[in-house]
Length: 443
Image 1 (cartoon, rainbow, N blue to C red):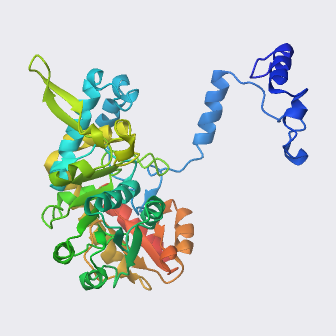
Image 2 (spheres, one colour; image 1 turned 60 degrees about the vertical axis):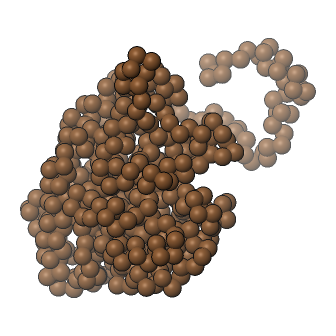
Image 3 (tube, one colour; image 1 turned 45 degrees about the horizontal axis):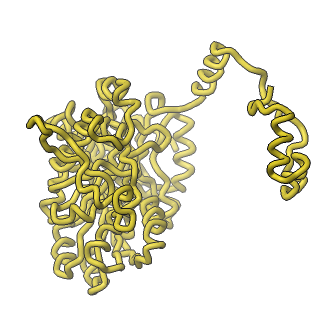
């Protein structure tokens, strides 16, 4: 039987009400060549057992980082995730919960978000965090809009070496708001603070810098801070949350808004999503923040309770004065990050960061000793670095994929076919690193 179980008589009634005599007349505006002439050749119905077998057969064709030695990064990283993370977030009260529209009956969800906000503030050094964003790219774009609201200026200076995906999202976000984007070219893989100084004027709302940047290099944010704040612009930094366990906290170099991609905190790589972005800032900017904020209070009995706060900024309260149209906080992904950070603790996060950076530097040194290969930049880096290759990076990636090694990310979009971005996490053993070097030598 048809999926829509209308009888012939019911169809006649509907067509008559619409004012046409037949279904063909109803779709007469659709060109003949686009109309379905015969039934789609679908498979016959299958039982649950048959469907399960088919799906298992299809998923078996996938290649994952448990099967392959992966050095891919560029914003999404292969960190180890303790089994307890999935065990907690798979509980039905978390898995089925969505954004707490009825806050009074969502105390568990609100508490989890409150704990997440607290952890992000501890990690970044900022005073207030929202409940999460869609991803790092949209969080960065929202931070620019936030800076324009605060300063009432509509010119943003953006480091040219931030993630290209972020640039695309920023362009989409700011186009309608008529914010002028000015990009600063990198010099030897990093931003020269003097280049920013030359572009600053009294119309500039903010300066956006990513550290470590897209090439993996660490920026001199202390020098940039002095230049930016002399002009009364806001300083926005895009950071890798794992790096904050060993690198300077953004509060130390006086960042005004801190954003980033949170996937590395207990979330799988999946197929590049779902992800979640984080956004934290100084308390003085709290009414300019996008997204939801959970606060702690007491109920009528004096017991601790949680509630959505500062809601006058949001589109469901005062639409004309909303700080953004962010109406989801990727609650399950931020919960995974919360569980992960609580499980790891400060010492655990520090260990992840230390192992990632030490293994990355070991691999970088080994690769630079291979004939024809060298580090593209003489700059400090965290867990990711750019390699200058003797042949196009795409060819190396293709050859190593056949050896079950995901060599990294081709940086040809930056204008050089011979640049390979390599990421290393704590999951890599010495054998994993040495096998990668051996494969490069063979290529």
